[in-house]
Length: 289
Image (tube, rainbow, N blue to C red; front, side, top):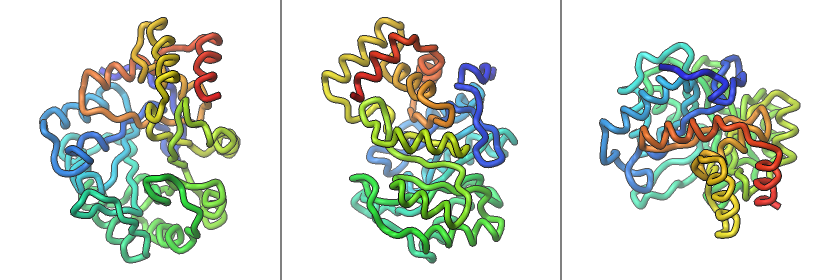
């Protein structure tokens, strides 16, 4: 049974699609290192079906996860897709035999990745495509006009409905916006790493979603202790409290927390639904101070 949208943080218009602010990231459904199939395929399918059953209407994936694993799982578990469901994917990086993520942002490479996502998900057009930039150390200042223009051409051909950017600098976001509209930005951000605070506020004013990844990572032991103290006081998991803080941080923040466990998915939803007090927020804000 679907839970109320208020317990999923309400909704946000991602492009022309109203989605639950609490979404689901499918990355963890692939095998170790995001390579190969899951150890428990039926369990992975169950997580996807439970996400939709809970009322989650935003799922994040990429053909590079596996590669091809998470898209195939989403197709098997959920196709034909509910009209309410938006599936976002990413292009701009591939996988090599060593599990690396080499960049692939030439026009031909991007077109092949779009074709692979269309085929894997079994759709005539992709709801939202994020152009993945930089590398795994973070954003890198580099021109993006050629890559983003290629995706705009594919959008104009009807293969993509909406575009976004991921792992991007503020300058790259502006560069993309000068070429065409973006529906969202997907960057690393959490309680302990708040370098995008000004960007989040600017995007909120412009009606653009901000989708943080790595919502509970890179904390020092002291920061983790502070988070755990709030979680213990509120009777929730640290992850749940960190997600609740993100939802209260700004109305344009959309979550894509991932898990391969139905139980953990339910726990995350329950924790994120907690209404944090002013005291809670002040204590949590000090983590990023």
